Amino acid sequence: MKPALPAKLLQALTPWRNAPAWHIAFSGGLDSTVLLHLLASLAKTEALPTLSAVHVHHGLQGAADAWPAHCQSICDSLSVPLRIMRVQVRPGASLEQAARDARYRAFAEVTGAGEVLLTGQHRDDQAETLLFRLLRGAGVRGLAAMPESRPLAAGYLVRPLLLASRDELEAYARAHQLEWIEDPSNADPGFSRNHLRHHVFPALTQQWPQAAASLARTAEHMAEAQGLLDELAHMDLRAADQPSAFPWLPLSSLALAPLRELSDARQRNALRHWLAPSTRLPDSNHWAGWYSLRDARDDAQPVWRLTDGDLHRSGERIWWLPSMWSEFSDASVSWTDPQKPLELPGNGQLKLIGQAPEGPLEVRYRQGGEVVEVPGRGRRDLKRLLNERGLPGFVRGRLPLLYRGEQLLAVPTLAGLWASSSDDWQLHWMPQTCDQGLS
Image (cartoon, rainbow, N blue to C red; front, top):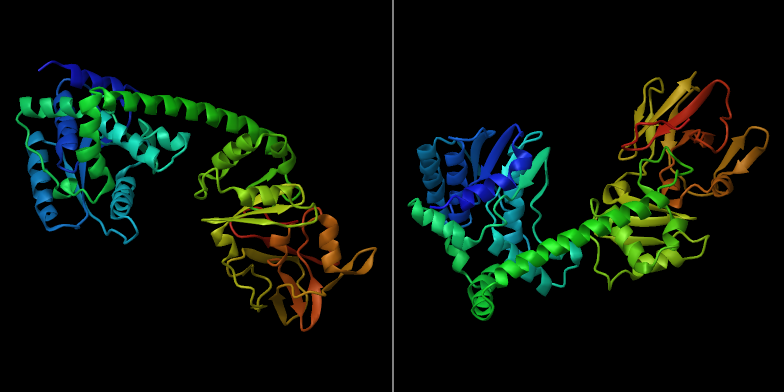
């Protein structure tokens, strides 16, 4: 057996040789069996990180109940420790996706800081992924298919066999008389990938024998193009990442003016990069919500509703509000001991600095028509004061107000708004997930 495959593997793993540990995702199938055998063999002659294997048992089919024992037997023969993890697959529209999600949650659980999880996907898998996503109308990021590495929990997921073909893996397995599991579901044409693998790819390779290699190479080109788009997004976001007038708000935001100067395509690219960690975004044909928000009147407060939260505009600034931001109760709360901070359900913490006023005290939220005492200006309408300072509308309904009976005693002393009406005490509000109080 020529050392081509071991050499490819070692080259791919060069950046990860100093990791604390390598965990091998071991299904018992051909790909992961070859990967495990390769690494166990190389460990005898190379200084590699500590090896272990992880088998995820989904429990979706009866045949799978025998697989943990098979995997344990293989690992025992190679002196590689095995961890078997049983997971619950959450029901959803796609069984394939639900099983994948469960699998990767388990992988994240075992991957410690700086450690590496190794999976056995190969060049043919990469080609299938590209074609599958192409048929779904994916953009450049999707057509980059599977990256060679990506963050996973506190460590990394690495695919060191992406430059190897399935034929190479099968040749290695036969040469070393390896035994592996054939998953019955891999023959089910009802799964989209199986249809591509068993019906589409044979026809492609009959006409174009290098189809898999060419498609995998295209995925590399797309990955490089996506890297350039990411660099462009970083440049555009740096220009828009200007300080907010409300630094105490624990929310991501951008200045709108620098984004307006960009073409629509660059705007979408920058926003995709900014929002990708937070929510799923629509394709390029369904961005009407963004254009409406961007082009609204200056005094409007438009909202673009997305899967995992909302994009708000306040004046010349856009703010990302995750779904959890709306999960708070606006019910009044009694403050029986004002010497201690008051936890507001879903709305952070309120505390009094100085000599607390006499009670009984209660925290309420705005209903409209509130009037507050402002030093040097007398009694002023709260709504007008908030308008003067441009406080975003999505914050106003969460603003905790301190009452004694029907008397409004205080509004939090918001940074940049107005001074406290009392020299003896001040009311400070720390919004949820915000470590900085409002003073």
